[in-house]
Length: 160
Image (cartoon, rainbow, N blue to C red):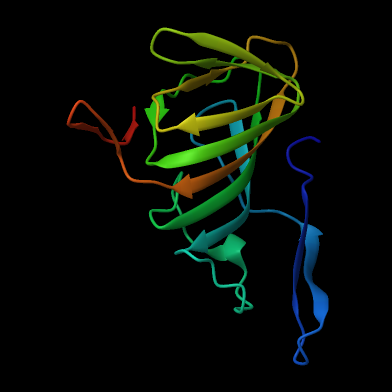
């Protein structure tokens, strides 16, 4: 996968309630939050439980890094030397490394993740670093969460 050939297949229902393929296309809503990072938005939802009755295209909803009351599903490519972007989100993030390798920096820890590795990110300040010669591609599902509280102190979302 390169920047950015992500085929997006979305199911739905016809007027009789039969299962259909509602969307089958190459996802094309790309964004970048820093040099060396490109992402494609696959789908978003709003609220819980999710409403599967609507025919709206979840990739056309406006969201930031996260959705305050829902979910965000995106594919991210991190180029070698991607610019630092330490941040914390009010979400629980499920991440899967599809290809390549990346380092996740925490306050006092660094973890190397490789293709096939999975991560559950729970509102911690983190940064992605690619010190390799090839891109790292990851899939992320971000689920809205309350801000983390430690010792009675709320740790707010940050994007520095």
